[in-house]
Length: 283
Ligand code: SIN
Image: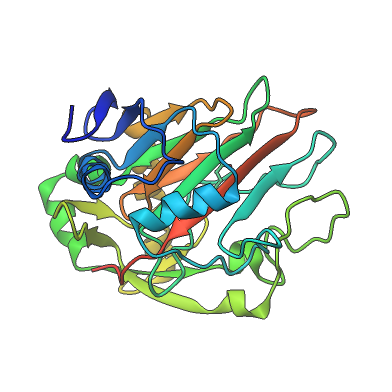
């Protein structure tokens, strides 16, 4: 028990399941506080059996914080804060989120959290992998940790949503409403190591999709260091493989978690609804 919540730990200090909570009811101030306390210990919280429609997803998300905006995916027509992560059985387009990333890290204030609710889950595959960027940082040699703490990295949406990005090829079979734009070419600089505003823990804040370079290093050396760190962050010891069930909701913390949408469900439909929570400038 944690205050008003019953938690089942799945991976120490990383993943826990919230048992028995019905998040489509209006929750008490104490319950919301207990979720936030649990979330500061477990950056990934799993809420099984949440039968709700977009309105309830929005209402639950809003109880946790201000909603974020999704720049390059058109939201549901009636719900500007909900995007549908959708892939039809016949699709052969690149899978949305199928590289290690944290959501919208190229924004000046990237989202603190993401809520993903499973609508249609394929009978095989379609897992989401989560990497623990706190633990990955903490396990590095002390000298490297000191060096990294003084560095910053350049982030951009261009590799995914720019005119030459992964999703730029027009493909009539794509069911997600992805927006390709010159705006994606903008860049943002964030510290390579950030401190979590609630827990005070440090984490690596880089990812495979949006992190282009290290500001203080010449490009080849910077790329080599990024490659080394990205490999380290996604070693098995730091990764949790999440298996979805219909109506399951997962809340994760983009400030200290990277994630990867796994494939392996060709020939099957997969539909998820997603909201993000507004974040702060990484520091
Ligand atoms: C995402 O990257 O937000 C999507 C994750 C998933 O579909 O599993």
